[in-house]
Amino acid sequence: MKKVLIIAIAFLAFSCKKQEAEPAEKQAEPETAVSEGMQEEVQTPEQLGETLFKGKGTCASCHKVDTKLIGPSLQDIAKIYKEKNGSIVSFLKEKSDPIVDPSQYALMKPNIVLTKTMTDEELNALEAYVYSTLK
Ligand code: HEC
Image (cartoon, rainbow, N blue to C red; front, side):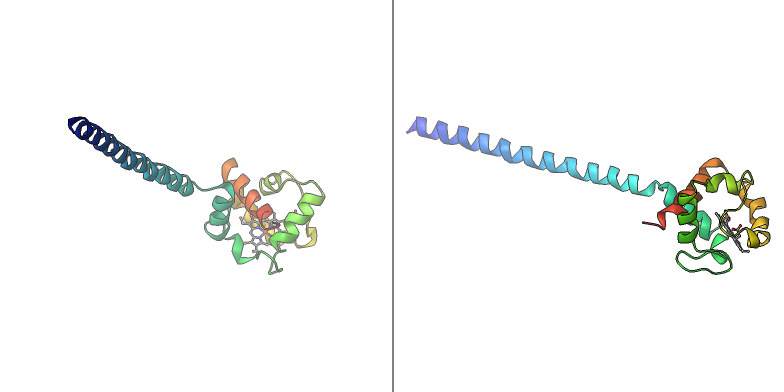
């Protein structure tokens, strides 16, 4: 009888330990969830580009994603730059000539004054955003 009791206690103690172990494992989960959340807060180049495009770049006032407004659509720009293997970044630095619609360049040119003051990170982000419209 005593033996049975000891075994029962041992069994109980063992199963208790098991139960204790589980919540500890679960506690680890929110931690990974938090770090995933933090990663989401870090903007991808495309997201930064979109923010600049619609924000301080004011590009969105002339360019729409899929239709021509005052300037060509972003999809047209992305397509032509891809086909011709051009660099949007170097265009925005005034280091290469317009290849999409050179006859309308006079309207775009004033914006180059602004984009020339942007960092490489910002210009790469704008380029990434323009290309992301092709997906
Ligand atoms: C006042 C209107 C206007 C604004 C604002 C504007 N654009 Fe443009 N954009 C144009 C027009 C018009 C063209 C077509 C002329 C041309 O191709 O250069 C153009 C062309 C372009 C091209 C293609 C250039 C090429 O090779 O022909 C790119 C890239 C571009 N814009 C990016 C931008 C970005 C980035 C911004 C914001 C910083 C911006 N634009 C703001 C009017 C504008």
